[in-house]
Image (cartoon, rainbow, N blue to C red):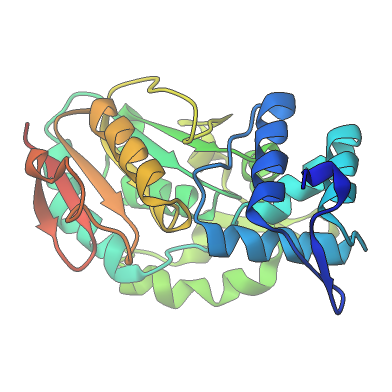
Amino acid sequence: MAADAGVAAIITGTMNVDEISKKSLLNKIHASYGYDFTGYAGGSLDRRISRFADLWNISTAGDLEHRLLNDSVLFEDFLLKITVNVTEMFRNPSFYKSIREKVFPAIATYPFRRIWHAGCSTGEEVYSMAVLLKENNLYDHTRIYATDINARVLETAVKAEYKPYPFHSYNEKYLDSGGMRKLDDYYEPHGSGRIKMDNSLGTNITFSPHNLASDSTFNEFNLIVCRNVLIYFNTGLQEKVLGLFCDSLCNFGFLALGSKENMLLSSLQDRFEVVDKHEKIYRKIA
């Protein structure tokens, strides 16, 4: 039965989208909006679609498809809910400590450095990297390219304005990463009870949209950071994105993945050496 006929079942307020309906929905989203979710891991994606439908009181796959394809504002909210935007300053401090100690000495030998933060969300981890670069006297000759599929979270990243509460808890993470000052030296109170990152941190950062599922390489990088993004992709899309990263790295460039991600099952593993097994940091050698 076709998706338009309302194949999906209604289960006590939670929409259960069958594979045929989901494939129809994702293909039409790709054709209409250019976002390709067909390579996302099934279970996680199904749950997020179902939660979105519940939020908007949508009970069938046919209704969901119709409304998303005919309401661009609703689709913007769908995009925000369907993508994962969990981030914080100095997330996993041991990772940043390893970057300081095992990556920076190598990239410091280049007269100019390019870093790509793929899947940067609202930007907290990008500004964390900027702080690290400043404290190691590398910022002035480094350009950070920070990308995400979601334009709305990029707006937040560009403004660099955040709620103050979580930032008060980030100082310990910053110090555990090897921080040399106090984290609040890098932000100040802003209007409406928010804080704003110091303007100097954003001067060498370029934020822009990029879809890892469908877009190509756009520069050559000394370091690519893409943490906790690949876990939401199926095996085929993971391999495709790792290939994109490999093509985007200069010789002896570094790739940093999330704690549950690695190169071990990739056909590209022979092109990388392990720099830090625990922190999932690799270096391109071929």
